[in-house]
Image (tube, rainbow, N blue to C red; front, side, top):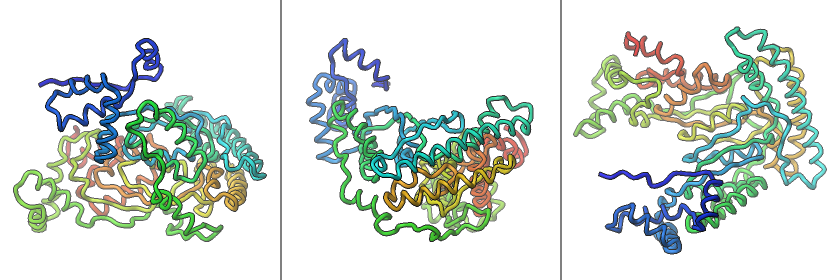
Length: 482
């Protein structure tokens, strides 16, 4: 046996220094080319890599033939890029971060004080509404700083002594940020393979926002000479453009006409779930260790009592820790919810990319979320005033540029979301979002989701909980601690 580290990502400054000294062409294409040949060549993988490095032209021709002519696109996944995206809007991140198999780390408004930096959508530059947009953002940012100061004082008075000054500061930022807009500047780091990069660029070109197209152009210009054989088809197809434009050509929201399925104080609704989910999961686990067919195992389970099935699940989950993923068979049972959440909450929900997230556009008629702390400091009126100013500007922009209007909406403004997850993902979601350290709004959402799931599938979800509650839940179920 031989295990070889074939490569790892390096900072671009180190690569450029080396390129200057050696004069060599540095490209990830050689890795993709070498790995593409594994299935058809008898040479060892390390030898194939050496051959690719010594003939870049041949490696690129090989990639082009295998990926684009033969259709083996997975070869492009062996080449990985890192991007710094600096000075982009908070709004455009929601188009970028739809990529499921990509790594993102974004500047958090929960921990960093904001100083009014924002992105002016290029669409507004030559229109009178531009000044209205800027004036509204200035009012939002003034309100943010005002609330931030008042909230710091409030949390200093009301939180127990074991909260550090930094923790108090973060709580104040966390709630004050609800009044800043989606145009607020942010930055992120991205790690992405060539196949997903091509898809991301297509999506940004098709999103209908000039900022998205500018980002896509800049990203492509950074890689087109480094890996020309891997990232080629970046222009959206007619299908891509039609799909992106469908909602705008067939539905245009008007003030006051959005039907809401949500009752007062209830922002999570179950749409669908696998009623036999507990049995499906248990049958699949038994199937993995059996020679019987899945359906036959499932039929036999019907003869077992709920108590017997519970004991089987307890045996399966025994010795599990709060950081252990549950078995893959737990992916066979799904829940689908419709959620009404603020942009602030959605910024965290969207990180659960292994779930299925389908979001409606932000719109004032979905309302906005007011943090309880704002009411505690008697500033609800001021909060509503800035929401009204924001909504007025939104409708003015919407009349000219419907797609651009959400830039002016705040972190408090809501959108409706379809959220589909399986029980395995539910465990991960709950551990992170029900934990006491999580942000209060998404924790509230998570608690509602988990309560519904436990009611519908009580056996497979018996250990679903926040990380901080895991020891108590486990000991209550097994009668002992881990």
